[in-house]
Image (cartoon, rainbow, N blue to C red; front, side, top):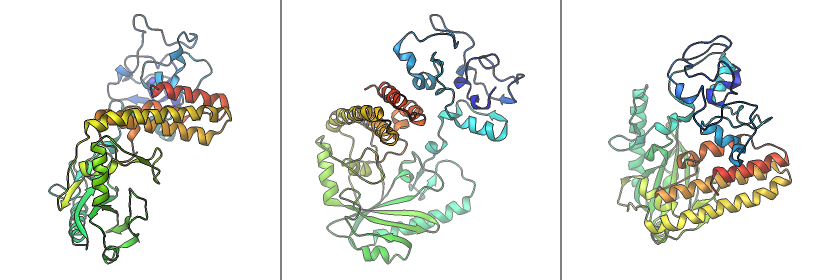
Length: 387
Protein backbone atom coordinates (compact mmCIF):
# COMPACT_ATOMS: atom_id res chain seq x y z
CA UNK A 1 0.00 0.00 0.00
CA UNK A 2 1.36 3.42 -0.83
CA UNK A 3 2.01 5.70 2.10
CA UNK A 4 -0.32 8.37 0.70
CA UNK A 5 -3.15 5.84 0.67
CA UNK A 6 -3.31 5.21 4.41
CA UNK A 7 -6.99 6.14 4.64
CA UNK A 8 -8.49 3.01 3.15
CA UNK A 9 -11.55 4.63 1.53
CA UNK A 10 -9.29 7.14 -0.23
CA UNK A 11 -7.03 4.59 -1.86
CA UNK A 12 -7.24 3.54 -5.48
CA UNK A 13 -9.09 0.22 -5.71
CA UNK A 14 -6.54 -2.57 -6.04
CA UNK A 15 -5.73 -5.97 -4.58
CA UNK A 16 -4.85 -5.75 -0.92
CA UNK A 17 -6.87 -2.56 -0.42
CA UNK A 18 -10.48 -3.37 -1.33
CA UNK A 19 -11.02 -5.99 1.32
CA UNK A 20 -13.60 -6.37 4.01
CA UNK A 21 -11.23 -7.23 6.81
CA UNK A 22 -8.21 -4.91 6.96
CA UNK A 23 -7.37 -6.20 10.43
CA UNK A 24 -5.00 -8.83 9.05
CA UNK A 25 -1.54 -7.72 8.09
CA UNK A 26 -1.18 -8.46 4.36
CA UNK A 27 1.95 -8.75 2.31
CA UNK A 28 2.79 -5.71 0.20
CA UNK A 29 1.14 -3.21 2.55
CA UNK A 30 4.31 -1.89 4.21
CA UNK A 31 3.18 -2.91 7.65
CA UNK A 32 0.09 -0.77 7.98
CA UNK A 33 -1.74 -2.61 10.72
CA UNK A 34 -5.34 -1.65 11.50
CA UNK A 35 -6.10 -2.81 15.00
CA UNK A 36 -9.77 -1.88 15.28
CA UNK A 37 -12.68 -2.95 13.15
CA UNK A 38 -13.02 -0.59 10.24
CA UNK A 39 -14.37 -3.02 7.71
CA UNK A 40 -17.40 -0.84 7.12
CA UNK A 41 -15.38 1.87 5.43
CA UNK A 42 -14.30 -0.29 2.47
CA UNK A 43 -16.36 -2.60 0.28
CA UNK A 44 -14.99 -5.62 -1.55
CA UNK A 45 -17.97 -5.96 -3.86
CA UNK A 46 -20.31 -3.47 -5.45
CA UNK A 47 -23.85 -3.37 -4.13
CA UNK A 48 -26.72 -4.38 -6.39
CA UNK A 49 -27.17 -1.67 -9.02
CA UNK A 50 -23.94 0.08 -8.02
CA UNK A 51 -20.77 0.32 -10.08
CA UNK A 52 -17.65 -1.65 -9.21
CA UNK A 53 -14.55 0.29 -8.18
CA UNK A 54 -12.59 0.12 -11.40
CA UNK A 55 -10.49 2.78 -13.15
CA UNK A 56 -11.73 1.56 -16.52
CA UNK A 57 -15.28 2.82 -16.01
CA UNK A 58 -16.23 6.07 -17.63
CA UNK A 59 -18.45 8.59 -15.79
CA UNK A 60 -22.11 8.21 -16.67
CA UNK A 61 -23.75 10.95 -14.59
CA UNK A 62 -22.88 14.56 -13.89
CA UNK A 63 -22.47 13.98 -10.19
CA UNK A 64 -19.68 11.48 -10.87
CA UNK A 65 -17.44 14.40 -11.69
CA UNK A 66 -17.76 15.55 -8.08
CA UNK A 67 -14.69 13.75 -6.83
CA UNK A 68 -14.36 15.39 -3.40
CA UNK A 69 -18.04 14.84 -2.62
CA UNK A 70 -17.98 11.21 -3.63
CA UNK A 71 -14.72 10.58 -1.79
CA UNK A 72 -15.58 12.15 1.49
CA UNK A 73 -19.04 10.64 1.65
CA UNK A 74 -17.27 7.24 1.40
CA UNK A 75 -19.46 6.21 -1.53
CA UNK A 76 -16.34 5.08 -3.40
CA UNK A 77 -14.21 7.03 -5.83
CA UNK A 78 -16.07 7.72 -9.03
CA UNK A 79 -14.33 7.11 -12.31
CA UNK A 80 -12.55 10.27 -13.39
CA UNK A 81 -9.40 9.44 -15.24
CA UNK A 82 -6.19 11.37 -14.61
CA UNK A 83 -7.72 13.07 -11.55
CA UNK A 84 -5.60 12.54 -8.45
CA UNK A 85 -7.51 14.95 -6.19
CA UNK A 86 -9.46 12.44 -4.13
CA UNK A 87 -6.57 10.01 -3.82
CA UNK A 88 -4.19 12.58 -2.45
CA UNK A 89 -6.40 14.13 0.23
CA UNK A 90 -3.91 14.73 3.00
CA UNK A 91 -5.58 13.09 5.97
CA UNK A 92 -3.75 12.89 9.24
CA UNK A 93 -3.11 9.19 8.77
CA UNK A 94 -1.11 9.84 5.60
CA UNK A 95 1.22 12.21 7.42
CA UNK A 96 1.81 9.68 10.15
CA UNK A 97 2.69 6.96 7.68
CA UNK A 98 5.20 9.17 5.91
CA UNK A 99 6.92 9.98 9.18
CA UNK A 100 6.93 6.56 10.83
CA UNK A 101 6.20 3.92 8.17
CA UNK A 102 3.87 2.35 10.73
CA UNK A 103 0.25 3.13 11.43
CA UNK A 104 -1.98 1.78 14.11
CA UNK A 105 -5.59 2.92 14.10
CA UNK A 106 -7.07 2.37 17.50
CA UNK A 107 -10.43 4.05 16.96
CA UNK A 108 -13.01 4.12 14.21
CA UNK A 109 -12.86 6.86 11.58
CA UNK A 110 -10.27 8.87 13.51
CA UNK A 111 -9.98 11.49 10.80
CA UNK A 112 -13.58 12.64 11.28
CA UNK A 113 -13.28 13.11 15.03
CA UNK A 114 -11.87 16.43 16.15
CA UNK A 115 -10.58 15.90 19.67
CA UNK A 116 -10.53 19.63 20.26
CA UNK A 117 -14.29 19.77 19.70
CA UNK A 118 -14.98 17.28 22.47
CA UNK A 119 -13.61 19.16 25.43
CA UNK A 120 -15.78 21.27 27.66
CA UNK A 121 -14.76 23.86 30.16
CA UNK A 122 -17.00 25.93 32.35
CA UNK A 123 -16.94 28.14 35.37
CA UNK A 124 -19.84 26.33 37.00
CA UNK A 125 -18.48 25.29 40.39
CA UNK A 126 -14.89 25.82 39.34
CA UNK A 127 -13.62 28.31 36.81
CA UNK A 128 -12.44 26.47 33.73
CA UNK A 129 -13.03 23.02 35.25
CA UNK A 130 -12.99 20.48 32.44
CA UNK A 131 -15.63 17.73 32.31
CA UNK A 132 -12.86 15.38 31.24
CA UNK A 133 -10.00 14.23 33.46
CA UNK A 134 -6.76 16.17 33.25
CA UNK A 135 -3.26 15.07 33.91
CA UNK A 136 -1.95 18.10 35.82
CA UNK A 137 -4.52 18.67 38.56
CA UNK A 138 -2.25 20.95 40.58
CA UNK A 139 -1.76 23.32 37.64
CA UNK A 140 -5.48 23.24 36.88
CA UNK A 141 -6.35 24.11 40.48
CA UNK A 142 -3.91 27.02 40.48
CA UNK A 143 -5.30 28.29 37.19
CA UNK A 144 -8.85 28.02 38.54
CA UNK A 145 -7.98 30.11 41.57
CA UNK A 146 -6.23 32.76 39.50
CA UNK A 147 -9.17 33.16 37.12
CA UNK A 148 -11.71 33.23 39.95
CA UNK A 149 -9.76 36.01 41.60
CA UNK A 150 -9.51 37.88 38.29
CA UNK A 151 -13.28 37.64 37.76
CA UNK A 152 -13.88 39.19 41.17
CA UNK A 153 -11.48 42.04 40.39
CA UNK A 154 -13.16 42.69 37.05
CA UNK A 155 -16.55 42.99 38.71
CA UNK A 156 -15.13 45.71 40.96
CA UNK A 157 -13.95 47.89 38.03
CA UNK A 158 -15.67 51.31 37.88
CA UNK A 159 -18.59 51.23 35.46
CA UNK A 160 -18.84 47.43 35.19
CA UNK A 161 -22.31 46.06 36.01
CA UNK A 162 -21.86 42.44 34.87
CA UNK A 163 -19.04 40.03 34.01
CA UNK A 164 -19.30 36.94 31.82
CA UNK A 165 -17.04 34.11 30.74
CA UNK A 166 -17.41 33.62 27.00
CA UNK A 167 -15.73 31.93 24.06
CA UNK A 168 -14.74 28.28 24.00
CA UNK A 169 -14.20 28.20 27.77
CA UNK A 170 -17.93 28.75 28.23
CA UNK A 171 -19.30 26.69 25.33
CA UNK A 172 -16.74 23.88 25.39
CA UNK A 173 -17.06 23.51 21.61
CA UNK A 174 -13.43 24.08 20.62
CA UNK A 175 -11.78 24.61 24.01
CA UNK A 176 -8.38 23.11 24.61
CA UNK A 177 -5.71 23.36 27.27
CA UNK A 178 -4.15 26.55 25.89
CA UNK A 179 -7.37 28.32 24.87
CA UNK A 180 -7.78 31.99 25.69
CA UNK A 181 -9.95 33.16 28.57
CA UNK A 182 -12.57 35.60 27.27
CA UNK A 183 -14.27 37.82 29.82
CA UNK A 184 -17.10 40.15 28.83
CA UNK A 185 -17.28 43.43 30.74
CA UNK A 186 -20.80 44.86 30.47
CA UNK A 187 -21.15 48.53 31.38
CA UNK A 188 -23.45 51.52 31.09
CA UNK A 189 -22.29 54.76 29.49
CA UNK A 190 -18.59 54.42 30.32
CA UNK A 191 -15.96 52.05 31.63
CA UNK A 192 -12.70 52.94 33.34
CA UNK A 193 -9.85 51.81 31.13
CA UNK A 194 -7.49 53.18 33.76
CA UNK A 195 -8.99 50.66 36.13
CA UNK A 196 -8.21 47.90 33.64
CA UNK A 197 -4.61 49.08 33.37
CA UNK A 198 -4.39 49.25 37.15
CA UNK A 199 -4.94 45.50 37.29
CA UNK A 200 -1.21 45.37 36.64
CA UNK A 201 -1.08 42.64 34.00
CA UNK A 202 1.18 42.67 30.96
CA UNK A 203 -0.58 43.41 27.68
CA UNK A 204 -2.51 45.92 25.61
CA UNK A 205 -5.49 47.97 26.83
CA UNK A 206 -7.53 50.03 24.36
CA UNK A 207 -10.33 52.56 24.69
CA UNK A 208 -14.00 51.75 23.99
CA UNK A 209 -14.75 51.80 20.27
CA UNK A 210 -11.17 51.11 19.18
CA UNK A 211 -12.14 47.71 17.73
CA UNK A 212 -15.32 48.84 15.95
CA UNK A 213 -18.98 49.25 16.82
CA UNK A 214 -19.59 45.56 17.55
CA UNK A 215 -16.39 44.25 19.12
CA UNK A 216 -16.03 47.65 20.80
CA UNK A 217 -12.71 47.43 22.63
CA UNK A 218 -11.00 45.75 25.52
CA UNK A 219 -7.66 44.34 26.52
CA UNK A 220 -5.32 41.50 25.59
CA UNK A 221 -3.50 40.44 28.73
CA UNK A 222 -1.26 37.69 30.02
CA UNK A 223 -2.33 36.40 33.42
CA UNK A 224 -0.32 33.63 35.08
CA UNK A 225 1.01 32.62 31.68
CA UNK A 226 -2.50 32.41 30.21
CA UNK A 227 -3.87 34.60 27.42
CA UNK A 228 -6.84 36.63 28.71
CA UNK A 229 -9.06 38.79 26.51
CA UNK A 230 -11.32 41.41 28.07
CA UNK A 231 -14.15 42.57 25.82
CA UNK A 232 -16.09 45.75 26.49
CA UNK A 233 -19.84 45.47 25.95
CA UNK A 234 -21.88 48.67 26.28
CA UNK A 235 -25.34 47.60 27.40
CA UNK A 236 -27.30 50.19 25.40
CA UNK A 237 -25.72 48.89 22.18
CA UNK A 238 -26.19 45.25 23.20
CA UNK A 239 -29.86 45.79 24.04
CA UNK A 240 -30.42 47.56 20.70
CA UNK A 241 -29.04 44.70 18.63
CA UNK A 242 -30.83 42.19 20.84
CA UNK A 243 -34.15 43.90 20.05
CA UNK A 244 -33.28 43.90 16.34
CA UNK A 245 -32.48 40.19 16.44
CA UNK A 246 -35.74 39.40 18.19
CA UNK A 247 -37.51 41.19 15.32
CA UNK A 248 -35.53 39.19 12.74
CA UNK A 249 -33.32 42.07 11.66
CA UNK A 250 -29.54 42.21 11.60
CA UNK A 251 -26.56 43.67 9.81
CA UNK A 252 -23.16 42.21 8.92
CA UNK A 253 -19.97 44.18 9.62
CA UNK A 254 -16.50 43.60 8.26
CA UNK A 255 -14.50 42.70 11.35
CA UNK A 256 -10.88 41.61 11.59
CA UNK A 257 -10.66 37.87 12.13
CA UNK A 258 -13.90 37.11 10.26
CA UNK A 259 -13.99 35.91 6.66
CA UNK A 260 -17.69 36.38 5.92
CA UNK A 261 -18.25 39.15 8.45
CA UNK A 262 -19.73 39.47 11.93
CA UNK A 263 -23.51 39.59 12.25
CA UNK A 264 -24.93 42.05 14.76
CA UNK A 265 -26.95 39.24 16.35
CA UNK A 266 -23.66 37.81 17.65
CA UNK A 267 -24.04 40.23 20.59
CA UNK A 268 -27.31 38.51 21.46
CA UNK A 269 -25.69 35.12 21.00
CA UNK A 270 -22.96 36.02 23.46
CA UNK A 271 -25.60 36.57 26.12
CA UNK A 272 -27.22 33.25 25.23
CA UNK A 273 -24.13 31.07 25.64
CA UNK A 274 -21.89 32.96 28.07
CA UNK A 275 -21.66 32.14 31.74
CA UNK A 276 -22.64 35.08 33.93
CA UNK A 277 -20.12 35.46 36.74
CA UNK A 278 -21.45 38.64 38.30
CA UNK A 279 -24.53 40.82 37.82
CA UNK A 280 -27.67 40.00 35.87
CA UNK A 281 -28.06 39.72 32.11
CA UNK A 282 -30.79 38.37 29.79
CA UNK A 283 -30.37 35.00 28.14
CA UNK A 284 -32.12 35.28 24.76
CA UNK A 285 -33.22 32.42 22.53
CA UNK A 286 -32.66 32.21 18.79
CA UNK A 287 -36.13 33.46 17.90
CA UNK A 288 -38.35 32.36 15.03
CA UNK A 289 -38.17 35.73 13.24
CA UNK A 290 -34.39 35.42 13.01
CA UNK A 291 -34.61 31.76 12.00
CA UNK A 292 -36.84 32.88 9.15
CA UNK A 293 -34.83 35.87 7.93
CA UNK A 294 -31.19 34.85 8.38
CA UNK A 295 -30.93 31.61 6.30
CA UNK A 296 -32.06 33.05 2.95
CA UNK A 297 -29.84 36.11 3.40
CA UNK A 298 -26.77 34.01 4.17
CA UNK A 299 -27.50 31.69 1.24
CA UNK A 300 -27.90 34.63 -1.10
CA UNK A 301 -24.52 35.90 0.06
CA UNK A 302 -22.95 32.49 -0.54
CA UNK A 303 -24.42 32.29 -4.04
CA UNK A 304 -23.16 35.79 -4.79
CA UNK A 305 -19.65 34.89 -3.61
CA UNK A 306 -19.59 31.89 -5.95
CA UNK A 307 -21.00 34.01 -8.77
CA UNK A 308 -18.08 36.40 -8.42
CA UNK A 309 -15.61 33.52 -8.03
CA UNK A 310 -16.48 32.14 -11.49
CA UNK A 311 -15.07 35.01 -13.57
CA UNK A 312 -12.16 35.31 -11.15
CA UNK A 313 -11.34 31.66 -11.79
CA UNK A 314 -11.25 32.27 -15.52
CA UNK A 315 -8.44 34.77 -14.93
CA UNK A 316 -6.42 32.22 -12.97
CA UNK A 317 -6.51 34.44 -9.86
CA UNK A 318 -5.90 31.77 -7.24
CA UNK A 319 -5.86 33.90 -4.07
CA UNK A 320 -9.09 35.77 -4.78
CA UNK A 321 -10.93 32.74 -6.11
CA UNK A 322 -10.03 30.54 -3.14
CA UNK A 323 -10.90 33.35 -0.74
CA UNK A 324 -14.37 33.61 -2.27
CA UNK A 325 -14.79 29.83 -2.10
CA UNK A 326 -14.00 29.90 1.62
CA UNK A 327 -16.34 32.85 2.14
CA UNK A 328 -19.16 31.02 0.38
CA UNK A 329 -18.64 27.91 2.52
CA UNK A 330 -18.82 29.95 5.72
CA UNK A 331 -21.90 31.83 4.55
CA UNK A 332 -23.64 28.57 3.70
CA UNK A 333 -22.69 27.25 7.13
CA UNK A 334 -24.20 30.35 8.75
CA UNK A 335 -27.43 29.67 6.88
CA UNK A 336 -27.63 26.09 8.11
CA UNK A 337 -26.94 27.01 11.73
CA UNK A 338 -29.53 29.80 11.62
CA UNK A 339 -32.09 27.32 10.28
CA UNK A 340 -31.36 25.11 13.28
CA UNK A 341 -31.59 28.06 15.66
CA UNK A 342 -27.95 27.76 16.74
CA UNK A 343 -25.79 30.74 17.62
CA UNK A 344 -22.52 31.13 15.74
CA UNK A 345 -20.36 33.62 17.61
CA UNK A 346 -17.34 33.26 15.33
CA UNK A 347 -16.22 31.25 12.33
CA UNK A 348 -13.95 28.73 14.06
CA UNK A 349 -14.97 25.27 12.88
CA UNK A 350 -18.28 26.64 11.60
CA UNK A 351 -18.29 24.70 8.33
CA UNK A 352 -17.77 21.33 10.03
CA UNK A 353 -20.26 22.18 12.73
CA UNK A 354 -22.88 22.98 10.09
CA UNK A 355 -22.16 19.78 8.16
CA UNK A 356 -20.52 21.25 5.06
CA UNK A 357 -16.92 21.18 6.26
CA UNK A 358 -15.68 17.85 4.92
CA UNK A 359 -16.89 18.51 1.38
CA UNK A 360 -15.93 22.18 1.31
CA UNK A 361 -12.52 21.62 2.87
CA UNK A 362 -11.72 18.86 0.40
CA UNK A 363 -12.26 21.35 -2.42
CA UNK A 364 -10.36 24.14 -0.67
CA UNK A 365 -7.43 21.81 0.05
CA UNK A 366 -6.71 21.32 -3.65
CA UNK A 367 -8.42 24.03 -5.74
CA UNK A 368 -5.78 23.99 -8.49
CA UNK A 369 -3.76 26.86 -9.86
CA UNK A 370 -4.93 26.93 -13.47
CA UNK A 371 -8.06 28.56 -14.80
CA UNK A 372 -9.90 25.34 -15.68
CA UNK A 373 -9.03 23.78 -12.29
CA UNK A 374 -10.27 26.83 -10.41
CA UNK A 375 -13.44 26.86 -12.48
CA UNK A 376 -14.05 23.22 -11.64
CA UNK A 377 -13.55 23.99 -7.95
CA UNK A 378 -16.19 26.71 -8.16
CA UNK A 379 -18.62 24.24 -9.73
CA UNK A 380 -17.83 21.57 -7.14
CA UNK A 381 -18.32 24.05 -4.29
CA UNK A 382 -21.71 25.04 -5.69
CA UNK A 383 -22.76 21.36 -5.65
CA UNK A 384 -21.31 20.78 -2.17
CA UNK A 385 -23.16 23.79 -0.73
CA UNK A 386 -26.36 22.92 -2.64
CA UNK A 387 -26.56 26.37 -4.20
